[in-house]
Image (cartoon, rainbow, N blue to C red; front, side, top):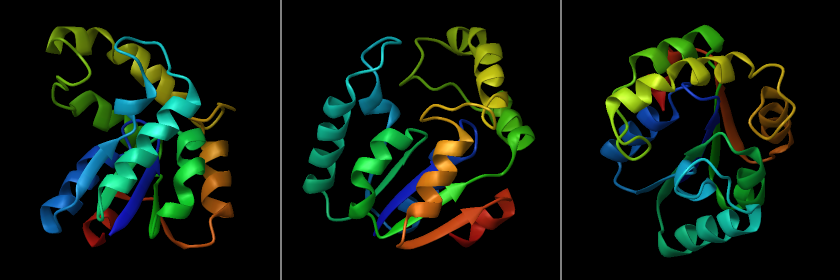
Length: 161
């Protein structure tokens, strides 16, 4: 099993990746862990890619999840399946509003909640962004991938993964 989950913030990537590895044990990597320095500064792309490639070489079975089309593009040939989570903006926002505290990203629940409005605005801009986080980049990556792939547009479809 070598799966990449791609999608907007709040699309359910982390939840689905955990569900997959509960069913079939594998290593899991959230690209958030390799994309940023401690703080808000994005790491150089080649450093992030090198860390992901090291992770891949260290594990036979894995699930990698994230919204970073630039990182995923560099490792796409390593996966057996690409799953594009695209449940719509309203679903992503609802997930962001209901997500539990993420201690790996925030020092406190209060800090996470203070960032919620910024996150929601960022999620809302998904369809119009032209960067590596936007729908256009995700769609291009998905459409150009020739291997096994699925686009899930409804969270009910996540149950069949």
